[in-house]
Length: 277
Image 1 (cartoon, rainbow, N blue to C red):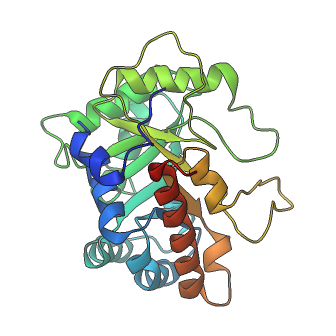
Image 2 (image 1 turned 135 degrees about the vertical axis):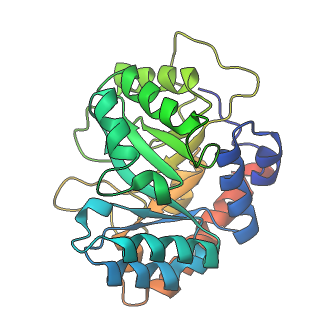
């Protein structure tokens, strides 16, 4: 897989053929932040409060919207309003994994109205290429209201101990991404995937974005098998955007903490593009 992580976000935005990836890089550059907050909260009030106080310091706000017990119009309108107010994008961590017809309905329509408010979603490769094709058909259709404003990440790796998202599975995610690069913008992975051998070859303009979960400065793991790495390690390993949840919002001062993550993540990025990392 080809990633142009040695280039600045500004240069990658300038060169990238996908408008959603272009917007991601421009947002990061404008805010001097590659932080994604993972907001695993269960009420609309909590979710919107966190988005409002941390919004100025992040590039994306990641949700698990199906755990929000009182999800509704207030949730959707609030997220969209705060995203505009603080200039961040919204990433719904849905991990679609079903037959193509079902995921199309889950994504566009349904009770959660995901396509209406989430700029970025993700999918597992376990169901095969059909799921990616189905989502890409919806997201790039001329009748889709948000065409060229939505993108997909492939769940190529996971940070949980004993994860089976390795080897041939990761390879298949890359192959699907290449087939549908008009909608797939990158991967959720623990590091850059440049070393993964693939059947297909990258195009000259290939530049997939890498999001890394499990970023935490204070601990190496939790009792349920989550494994963490620091912002510096993630960025040095080729990540473009670092995802942190409890390591930020569960602290005594989430605003002060997110500023530290932003500073460390941005500093690691500057070191990488200057060639000193």
